[in-house]
Length: 309
Image 1 (cartoon, helix red, strand yellow):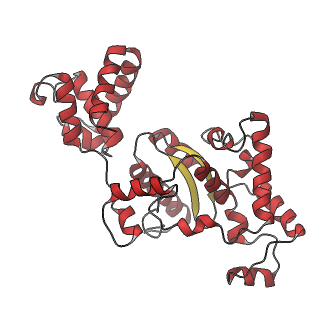
Image 2 (cartoon, helix red, strand yellow):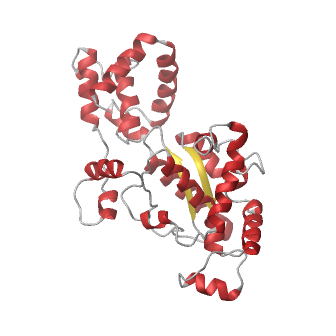
Image 3 (cartoon, one colour):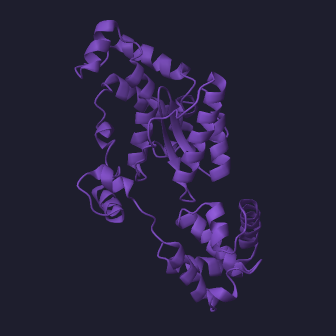
């Protein structure tokens, strides 16, 4: 939980929902298009902590994390319910031995009213998911963002949490073992046909959708970013790209960080050999300058439009 808060700070992840159990699910928004970097850091940080605590060595997680792009709107609201219900789906809270066995076989009938009551109690008391914050039972962590998903259930702030609790109960009452979203676990994207088609076009050809998703490439290259800034700068890169403090250099760094997926170290190498700390400090200064300088912000937006992002 502490590391989730730290990845939010380090990589500007917006964490909308999560559930931790024998594995974990989360709905994460990445304004800087840096999911891989943040997840790599999170996995290594947790593995190092766990190995030190339990006096073990070697990998902790089985393979790379799995991610699926999700369209906003009703899709992300439904997905949040799926994430919150994972403890009762996976751990079969409130079921006797026979019912647990039939659930494992995929033959589970909708739960009885008594089972629904037990499961709702378990969800309210389960400390390792975001449901208690969504249901209004606790304030939740500072790094958890609930408002965007809650307002999709009800525009009235005073009713949104009550509506969310109602929707959770409805899905518990009608059975939760064959969630339609489970069929999308290996899909290239979750959303409308138009949205999924866009993701497929970005990810290239492939016989299986998992192959497409694994090859999902960045939308722009570093070279495209430099050419766009050359155009708005009106001068060739050799005149300014490696020059300390030049605003064109920092527009390149900002755009490349957001849309090319480069690390801070890689950005430093591309722009004259600056180290990680220097790039990080310079980016923070430039962020403040962009906010304060309307003309510079307009130039940045012009370069961004040229990239068709």
